[in-house]
Length: 193
Image (cartoon, rainbow, N blue to C red):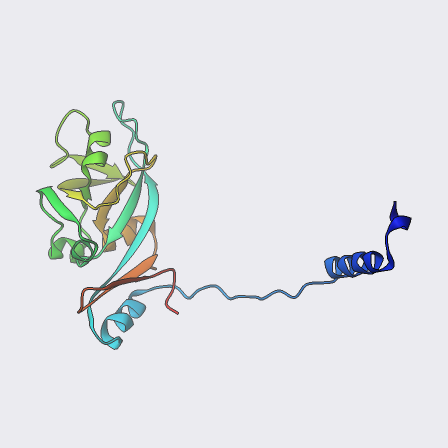
């Protein structure tokens, strides 16, 4: 029992109890600052050796019901024109989203072959329409991003950043990726430090 313990063991137990019951100091950290176009501009123009920088946002959104479609939600990936080259995407079929479509917030979309097969199992995705948030999006390209997971429950679709900001009702980037003139890539998320 307790009476069999030596004095040192009793002292150690008392010290442990004291440490366990004493109030603990905690470090309070303020939330990270949001990433907005101003931060992207700062990175692009103020850091030496930056070849390109691009921001992205992501978010889940429901797609219009279809009796033949099993997928009900997609993960929207809003990207800037520099992103495909920075991330090493490969165009398989169709075309990339144009600079004009990015600037104008067009309802155009890129999908991977895995996503295309899930959404349109009976035919080509190019030229198909997918309705997100009551807006029709035209599939203009089939891409390989190098990181599509065939087991993903929510498939990724890629649209212009300006369009994603509008339909997801967001003004902040999830991350900013930077490519240096030497070709090195560095992603800063969720905020610049």
